[in-house]
Every structure is written in C-alpha cells, then in structure tokens.
Length: 378
Length: 178
Image 1 (spheres, each protein chain N blue to C red):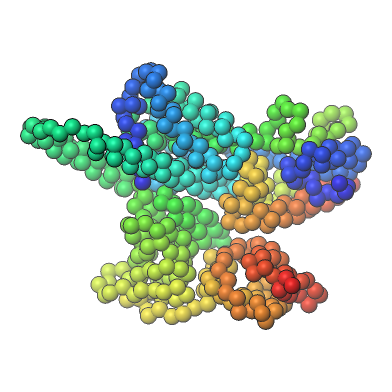
Image 2: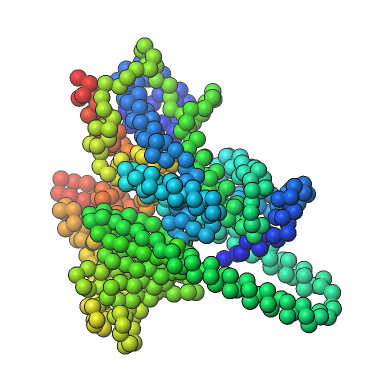
C-alpha cells in the first residue's frame, strides 16, 4: 500500500493485510502516525461531546418517539422521565446539529419496526383465521351475552374517544430558523424538509394534518386517508406525492413534482384547483387559487436547498447546473434528450452530481480547462 | 397497521406471571419480527443474532414491569430501538480483540498519552457544517454508508467530504504545530 494519507480516515474498510501494511508504515513514518493520532483525537473529542450532550441514548429514543407523533407508546414513567430530560435534550440538539439526523433515523427505524410487525403478524393472522374457520364448533350464544358485550364495547369506545381526543389535542411544534433547513420523518413515513424560517405543527398522535407557516418540501407516503397541509391562506389535500409549499407574505405557493394535489383557499367553497406534475398555483389570503401554470422544477423549487429533476432532459439540466455553479457544462448530442429523474443536495459538489448523472446514463464525465463534458462511455 | 392484539394479551399475561412455557412462546413469536427489523436497519451483518438475543433479553427481563398486556408491541419496539442505539454506541469503543476491523490501527506514541498542543474545537470550526455533521454522526457510531442514507446522498459523496475534512484538519494542525 502506498504511503498516502488518503486511507487513514477509512481504515475500517481495509483488509487485515492492508491494515498490517498500514501498521508497518505508521511505525516508520512519524508524519503518518501523527496525522492518524490527531484524527483519532478528533473522533474521541466528538465522542466525548456526544456522550456529554446525550449521556442516555434511551432518552433520545423516547424524544424521537414523542416528536414523531408516537407519544402514546411511552409509559407514564417514561413520559415523566422525558419531560425532565427535555430541556437538556433540546440544548443538545441546538449544540450538535447531527442529533437532528439521529432523531430522523430513529423515527425511520420506528417505521421499519412497525412494517416488520405488520408483515409478520398479518401473515400469521391470515393463517389463524383460516384455521379458526375450520375448527369452530357450532353453538348458540345466549342473548344476554350480546347485551353485556355491547355495553362494554360502548364503554371502551367512549374511553378510547377521550384518550384519542387528549392525544390529538397535544400538538408538536417544530421550528426551523432563517437560513437553516431540517428533515424529519413523520409517523406515517412521510418526509418533510422544513426550510427556515418556518413553523410546522401537528398532533402528537399523528393524523396526517399539518399546519405550516413558511416553506416545506414534502414526500408524502401513499395511504387511504388524505394528507392535508394547511397554511394561513390555503388548504392542500394530497395522496402519495412530492411537492413544495411556501407560505410567506400573505400568499401560499404550491409546486407539484409528482402525483396530484387539490388546492383551495381557506374558507373558500369553490371546487379545488387540481395540480398536475410540473405545475404551480398560488393562493392569496381570502382568495381562490390562481389557475395552475407550468414551471421549470429546479428553479421553482430552488428554495428547498435541493436540485429536483423530474424528467428534465439532460441538456436542460446541464444548462441549469452550469448557471447555478458558474461552470460551463457541455453534453453530447446523443445524451442531451435523455430525461432524468433525481434529487441532489445543492451543497453536494458539482463533480459528484455529474458523476451520478453520467452513471445513470452509462456515460462518462470529462474534465477540461473549459469545464465539464458528458460523453457516451464508448 | 397491525394491532397489539397480534400476540394475545392472555399469552403476555401468562408470560408476565412467570409461566416459562408462555415466556418461551412469546419470545419465539417476537424473534422473526426483531430479525427482520435489524436486517432492514443494518443489512446482513454477523451481529444480527446478538442484537436479536439482546433485545429478547431486554423484553424477558422487563416483562414483569409491563403494566398493560396489550402494549407488548410498543414495549418490544422500544427494546429494539434501545438495543440499536447501544449497538451504535459500542461500535467505535475500545474492545479487547486481537483483530477488530472497527478499531483503528495502533499509533505508537512516544512517552505515552500526551496532551494535544492545539484546540480541537477550533479545528472543527474550520470545517463546513455538513462535514462537521458527518464527523459527528460517525462519532455517534454510524458507518459512512448509513450516514449517506440519513443525509439523502451517496456514500462516495460522504467519503469525499470526510477526505476533504481530514486534509483540511491535517494542514491546519500541522500549521499550528510549527
């Protein structure tokens, strides 16, 4: 193995032989050894910071559950424990932004667990029902049993209603400051990217209804119940889809990337305006929505901090990226008409975006003093 | 979505009261769910068996504290999530092993452990917020591939950021050391 520094931050990927070779190099080359020592000191420092900020990761799990609308999964003792720890956890989230990503990861793990449970027990239930149907003996049940059952059922429903009302009544408020953005997975698996300044509110027992002030980009999980976003000016009703909503200066703007959404003004009784992918509509306070107009997706949703391409030809994408990064990008004519669907973070380096685009089309990227050139591989 | 009654509350109650057969049956029913969950989160790694067993142990030892028999699903989910967090925490912590791919190579330090002659916090401030977030997630216990999934990008992009961060810190620290 060459005596370069590149392998040091990625030692975990080395084979035992490569590690042995690295070990020998470390013993010979003090510069290499010092660089690794500093790197490890930095990792240890960050670990200590994290340990101090979150000494008990259990509490982070409880916090993530409550924040994603699953507070009902906590026992009263856990709820008390969480309330005591909440100020310290919120300070930790402010100090270490990576913890927001950890919270989102825990929420996504909840969705995975719920899926694993549902898949396993749905299969079992199906088998059991079939077996029960075969083996249940025929017999008459006395009428009084049904009276007792109906009464008990009524009591249970009333209690469940009270509980539901209490939990729906409790709201989660999520704020993102100006200039920042954050991503969160909700209890139904839908993903929200909140772009500050913005506030999002929803019930702790998540009911697929959001109240938004500011800007958000949403990827909504398909579900039989509608997903509703309310802004001060408008009501957006969707099934599974991706779209951006901005509510600023007394106006709400909706840009649809995929799927279908219905848009209506708050307090308006007209038939909602239906948006198709690639369209935008605006609603002023107290007004009906404007008729949808076609827009170019990357520019219309540039405020999300993402480059969103939804079937745009590669030639147009190159022109857009070229103007965004102020670097000339040329595309071979055979590739220019190829439509691309994909999303990239705007802070991702341009060469990586171009490599990903090229990989999609089995093309290659050539770098020259004049800029970049995307060419067929052969 | 499945309800908690997928495992009968009676079975949970019997297990909670210490009936060995009921406990074993309950744990056997939970095992495939936990296995599927850890597999989905971490992929096909050798530690899956340990994670499943540890979670079952958590469920087993916490069962007597379960107040409501119908809440087993929530109880098992929390046990699995706690176990996952412990797994991340333990990934990069020192363990006794002759060869452990998760531990860095040994650096021979003359005169043993010594104070670093620079401020690590100052060094970290020189990084971009994204690079710092990646390093924090790595220190939390995530792999680069997992970090890429969390940040909605590719492993290559994450490693590129780490490489740049490493290079920047190396230059910065060597300047300070002069």
